[in-house]
Amino acid sequence: MKKDDDIRIQLMGFASNGGGSASQARRSSLFRALAVRTYLMKEGIRSTRMDVRALGQTNVEGVPPDRVDVLVQK
Image (tube, rainbow, N blue to C red; front, side, top):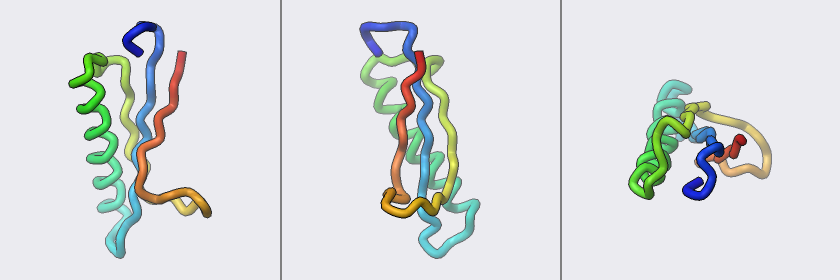
């Protein structure tokens, strides 16, 4: 991203509900995605080039529930 200013990313946070509510999972997924955004900002990437989405819990078999997916858009 440092070499190409046209690249944008979408950070999609996911989190298991851990026995809690769907809103707790969404909140956890938001904090997780924001942590990735903060790291990238410290590395010199402008926040205006990143979109954050908190998607909460997902039930896709074989995919870890606690993660941040990064989609690169040009």
